[in-house]
Structure formats: C-alpha cells, structure tokens
Amino acid sequence: MIRNRQCIVSIMATGAILVFAASAAVAAAHPAIGTWQLNLAKSTDESTDASPKSETFTFADTGKGVTLTTRIVGADGKLTVNKGNPIKWDGMAHPDTNGPDHDSITVTPAGAQTLEWAFTKKGASVRSGTLAVSRDGRMMTISGASMGAKGGKTYFNDVFERK
Image 1 (cartoon, helix red, strand yellow):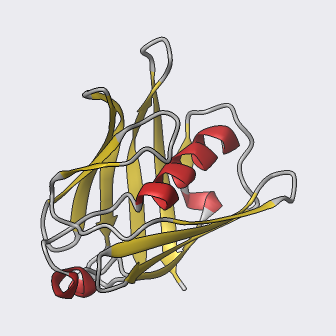
Image 2 (spheres, rainbow, N blue to C red; image 1 turned 45 degrees about the vertical axis):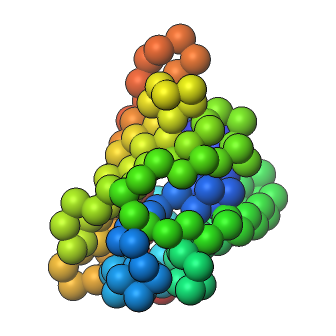
C-alpha cells in the first residue's frame, strides 16, 4: 500500500495532479485549496503495501497555478516531502515527465466540489479517479484505480480531513 500511495503522492506532487479552471482566481475558490490530513481509519487501499503512519496534502494557489505539497511519514518512520510545480486547473492534458509511470496529467472540473483526474503514459491511462470535497468543506475524498504492469486494477479510497 505504501508503494502505491507513495507513487500516487509522488506523481501528485511532481505534477501537481489537480488542475481546475483556467485562472488562478478560479482555482483559489475551489474548496480543495488548503491543508488536508489523511484519516487512515476511514481510508481503504487494495494494495498489499504497508500504510503510511501519516500523510498531509497542501494545495496552494501560486498565481501561476496550484501546487501540491505532500508530507508522508512512511510505515518505516521515514519522512518524505514533495512539492509539485504549479499547474493551472483547466481540464486539459499537461505534460509531466517527473514521474516514472506517466507522461501527462489531465484534470476536469466535475462540479463545484469535484474534480476528475487521470495520469497517462503514451496515451494510455495508468491511474485515474476523482477528488471530492464535502459540502461543509471539512472532508476530502480522493478515490480511483491504478493500472498494474500486467493490466490489473488496484482501487483506493483515501479520506482526508481539513487541518
């Protein structure tokens, strides 16, 4: 689970996974902007990797787009911090060569509280899902599936609480 989660987080951080409307002003209004702490008890992951001890996501509007900073304390106690490049949240594919298993990121607004996202490599989807923020703005759920090297899917549902 930790390998899958770290891969997802690394991709999110290096590519600033989530992308929304065409301007930073619109992105700033999105309820995902802020700091979120993973609630391990409410989260599920079909991966057999070990769960992290803690995980924090911080989405920030930079004026050039949204950055995602991740802070993960792995099952082994090792801290990993990643900060992605700013990306506009505009529903278009954005090249990203920072992750080994993808070459582009696409995020599409799917309502005021929800984003749909996908990572692709050479045009083929390798990971996709949704990010949804609760109406009260206190909970964020990132869910989806990762494609395995042999074509099988691994599903995950990560629940975060606003810090």
